[in-house]
Image (cartoon, rainbow, N blue to C red; front, side):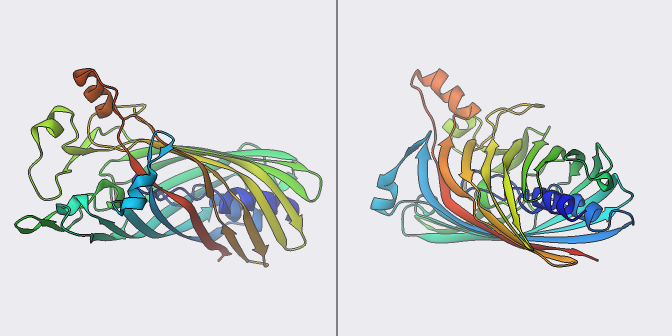
Length: 359
């Protein structure tokens, strides 16, 4: 039981969803499979498990496609985002195969830039509050108490538009200050009701080594949320033409995989993590402002297990960042006859620190 619990736990603690990667606004939706912990700490009884994951990163390196725009930092014109988030998850174990969970993200963002303030100096806008809450149910394909070498878990959820997607702050202009919606990357929510699909799996290779894999997709059918991108001003005719005058409600997804190695109460892990905002959604239209992008990271981690409490730390570190072409970019390219692709700022790494507690 201990080995199975450990393998499944690693699927949990290393599968908390991305809060963001800077200007690419990958929304936090809580840990995606915290129910696994609840099943395997006491698989023969029902109960609750509390999962807390805290994540921090600083984004400031700009990319167009996969090319870093190093001049932005050299000239001091880069946009800098600081994001600190806490995902609070509570899982109810229903029986040996089924569980249900609720995830509540609490987010604090700061964003400093020049261009959003008429280039009259570097000023900061901020946001703080609860993000989009998610409710999900999970089921194992096999009974985990029978200790199979391989098992998989499927999850379905609903993401609610509880995060403030109209959050405002002050922007400096040539004539004073105005109040307007903050940038999409630091809004607390996206304004859409979404649906999530998850798949979490593990494979044992003896007593100490195991593999894990996770897949998560958020479908956001709503196309736009109606929030202006003009930072308190009036949208330009060009922005209206390219549909970037209002914010979109994009899909997002995450794919992870790697290996775990156990030494007594310690577990060391390493793998790859790929997270993205696609340019086009599975359901609904694609107009509106978004910064689609992809981030590939190596993800080292460490976990320490107590009887009911488990502590973990992971540090996903970027090895590829790609600001892909958005649908409005494609419209602009078609109308102007010149291939256009916007830029976005990404982080070098993020720090994920948290715990899982059987109540």
